Length: 192
Image (cartoon, rainbow, N blue to C red; front, side, top):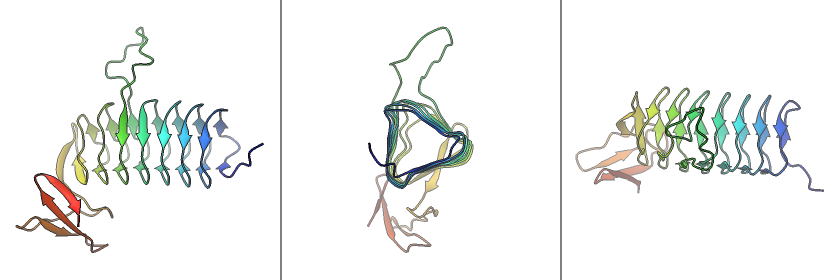
């Protein structure tokens, strides 16, 4: 029998047939469903549901009251804020069964999604993007973009450390905390 190298609170429900990485912590009343894959050193908060075939990379932080539905993939170092919401069907109807028609949503490496935000399925979130609290994402979010509102609108750019980037007239910016440098060209940000 495999040795369990993760922590699960006694009230958590861990179904057979899921994969959970070393060092991961699963807290009160959370449910990990079959065929889901959770990477190493993740933190799954209280009252979280991870549906079948969901994939979480390494070091993903899922705050309380989040449901991650089939079709969602979160890459390494993603942050999912308290009570944020994913959807997986664009036109749900109680009387119409659409299992197997779930749209995929990919949250790329290092992205953060704020508390109570909603991500409408099929809209990917770019690397190190930041979705503000309460935002409703109805279209793709670019890497390093900062989006807020309903529907969400891009209001700027953000560093890998989570600070607003102020680009000069030549398209260069420096993160206040890390001192890393970024360049903006053709509406794309790259760390240099």
